Image (cartoon, rainbow, N blue to C red; front, side, top):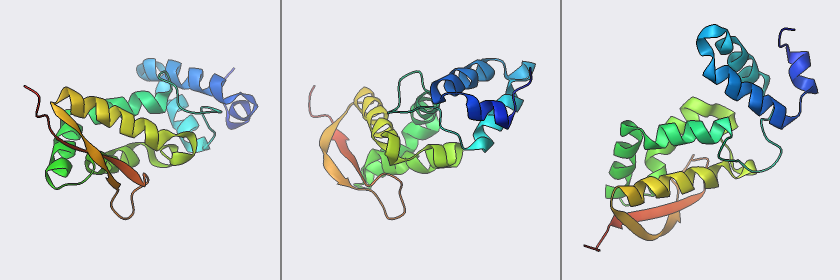
Length: 148
């Protein structure tokens, strides 16, 4: 039975998340059509906070850990901004309204950014407001680690 908007509407958010992940793994075998349908539906893929298996979390990890994501976070850090300020526009561009604070998505993005910054040899220097127009309101500020 083909997946339709009506069928998506009857599914739980978690069931839609499983369908989304299965479609993502089978993009070349018709999965892209399902991904597009789910993305355009606006239906949630979770009923609580983001889990590590959530497609939004997985995509944020891919974006933030990418070379471009890391470079943008380092640039933001050099300007005294939160690292997330550098990469958030990529997240918003890719995920659109699936990236928001209501499900702790911005917290999750900040957590992933923190993992990357620690991996790159930075240490936490505090918190600061995000630039005007950002989805996240505050985020961590980093500095090169003073530990040898």
